[in-house]
Amino acid sequence: MLTIGTILYVSLLLINAVAVLSEDRFLARIGWTSTQPQNSNAGFHQSFDQSGYGYAQQDVGVKVRLINLISAVRTLMRRLNLVVIVYELILGG
Image 1 (spheres, helix red, strand yellow):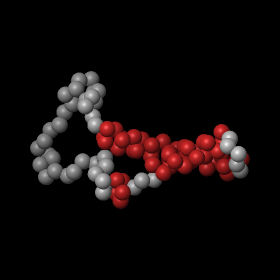
Image 2 (image 1 turned 90 degrees about the horizontal axis):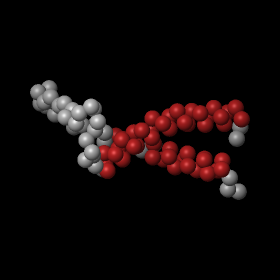
Image 3 (image 1 turned 45 degrees about the vertical axis):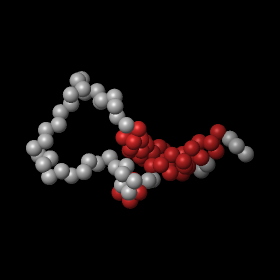
Image 4 (image 1 turned 60 degrees about the vertical axis):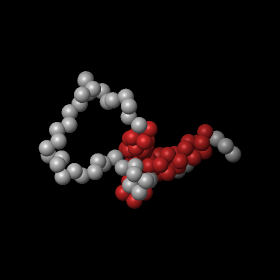
């Protein structure tokens, strides 16, 4: 039977599938890492924000946005999974 609880559990599992993707093992192979490559002259390069007021530039690509989305999903799912586990332990759904 398809209920709201079933839909929530399925969506939770699908979002967890994205959160479980290992950045080192899977995402690095296809070039989707959030870390920048190490540069030997990194100490001499001074980067600063030229956009004013700290806002990001508008020409950020889809790939960078997806990498940031995966990182944000990981952070959110850590807390949400904890809430679901406590709910299941207390109420036994």
